[in-house]
Image (cartoon, rainbow, N blue to C red; front, top):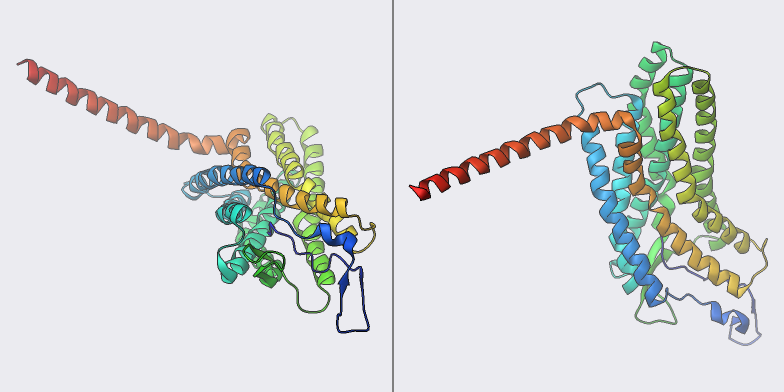
Length: 353
């Protein structure tokens, strides 16, 4: 998760001289040097990130609390959703750092540069893979309605959760290549970005971005589309009204996933094509892609705060689980108001006497 882009291998147009000057940069590419966002867009994006943070933290805490305190036996989907809220919440905790970096540059040092990128990338993979796990569980429950399937799923769900967390953190290890450094053209503003110093930086970057495409978007999207397509077909042939209502959540989950992440992955795919010279270099396009990566990456974080809304306001089952919590809270408020009213009445009568 880097809001400042490193262009060290972006400009291959150089010539080698016979004197002691090894590289001469093509003047046509000088205007494409790394620049932070202008003040107004940076401030706007910063406010959006803070809004996402303020929505994501309480929303995911509420969903996690409702699931964690449930007295009923948790289904595999409940377990996956609980871990999803943890991943989304942890990812949201890194947002204030990126928001400040947009305005001030990276001021948190090299360790946090590595650690926060590692935590963000790991929870990015975890969140999306658990969405795929939920789709697989819904597919097995609705398409294969055998009780034995449900029993096996409950036994294996926690093991699968551990595997998802381990796999996600393994996929995020390239984030350790992130470093805090200063640009040569700016002696004050620090950057936090990947600086591959083993082999070709472009090759490393394309490989890591390829993993992000495959395991962070294409594979989970394929799993969700396949599982939910078969599930919807099964539901449409059944006469169970409750299952028909469950389709609202399924459709909403897929649509929101596409709306949040498709722009970012499309932009990143264009970036890979430019770095591999499949799209000819153009300064204006290069700068537009860089800005688009920052903006779409930020807007994709809306996914971390929309998931609780989907399950709280679209999912009937979750609303039923939340109902006892609000009923108990309302009873406590009524008792508190009655107590205050009685106290005030007693004080008033005493004053009159």
